[in-house]
Image (cartoon, rainbow, N blue to C red; front, side):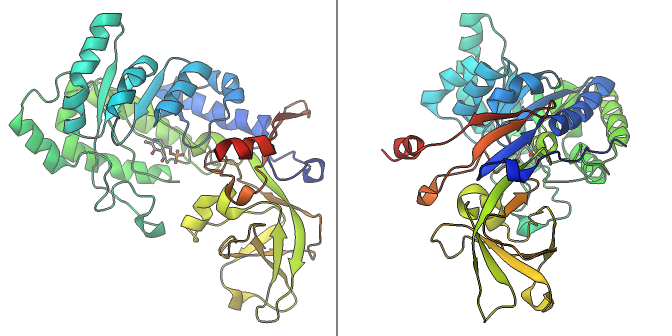
Length: 407
Ligand SMILES: Cc1ncc(COP(=O)(O)O)c(C=O)c1O
C-alpha cells in the first residue's frame, strides 16, 4: 500500500479564492496509475471532464497514455496540449462537428447503433482520404448499479439512463443487421462513481454474462472511470491481477479512464471568511466566504449528501447533533442566492473569525472544470505548488474574463 503524502500547503500564503494543486501529491497519484499500466499493459487516459489544467499536462503525460474527452472542445484541448491519443465518448455527435472530431480523436465511442450507422461512412471516408486509422467503439450499459448511493444521480446504469446500449437493444440490433459490429474494435462501459475494487470485481461477471460472447471480436474493452485507485486503502495489486486475468481471458487490452483518481486530494480550494452571521434560531453560526458553492462546487449542491472535507474541522450532518459548547458553522457562499451553502455543518477547534482561511481539501476534482462566474463572483485563481516549494500562479481571473462571457 502506498500512502498518499500529506499536503504542504500553507493556506495563509494564498490569496483567495484559489485552487492550489500540489505537485508532490499529483505525482504520487500518477505513479500509482503508471504502476497499474506498466504491470498490466493496459492503457490509461486522463478524463478531462474531471480535471483539465492543461498547463500541467506535460507532467501527466509522463505517466498516462492520453486523454478521454466528451466534447469537441475537450478533444481539441487533449490533441493540442496532451498528445494525439484522444479517446472520445459522447451520448450523441453533431453533424457539423464530426469532421473535427475525426481530426482530433484517435478513438470514437458511440452511444447507440443509430449513431454508429449514421457516422460510419464518414469515418471510412476520413480513413480513405487521410490514410489515418480511427478506432470505433460502442458504449454498453450492463444495467449494473451496484450500491446505488446519491439517489442514483451518479449511476450511469440506473433505470432510464440514456448512457450506453442495453443488452436487449444490442441483440435486437444484431438480429436486424448481423454486420452491425463490423468496424467496431472495442466496447466501453462506465458504471462507477468513487468505488473500490470489489465493486468492479462484482460488476465484471455481470458484464461478461451479458456481453462477454462478443468480446472475442474486440481488441479493447474500456472500463471507464470511477475507481478510487489512488486512495490509500484501494487494492492496487488486486486491480493488477483483475486486469491481467481479464485481458488474458478475452484477448483484449483494457482501457481505463481515471479522472478523480488522478487529482484526488492533490489540492485544495482555499477561501477566506468574510463575515460570521449569528442567528438565534439555529445552534450554529454561519461563516460567509469569499467564494460560492453554487459557482465553484456545484456537485455539492446537486448531492447534499456529499461530504466536504475541510482542514481542521469535522462534519456533523444534522443541526440537532450540535452541542452548545461546539464551534459549529455552516459554510456559506458570498453570493445572494439563498441556497449557496453546504448542507452539512463543520465543527472547528477554535471560533472562526474574519480573514481565517477555509481549506476545502479535495478541492480540485470536478470543481475547477464546472466553475462558473455566476453572480460575478470572483473566479478562484489557479496556483501550482511545486515540489521545490515554489508557488507558481497559473492563472488569475479578471473583470475582463467575466465581461467576455456575458456578450
Ligand atoms: C465516460 C467517463 N469516463 C470517465 C469518467 C471519470 O470518472 P471518475 O472521475 O469518477 O474517475 C467519467 C465521469 O463521469 C465518465 O463519464
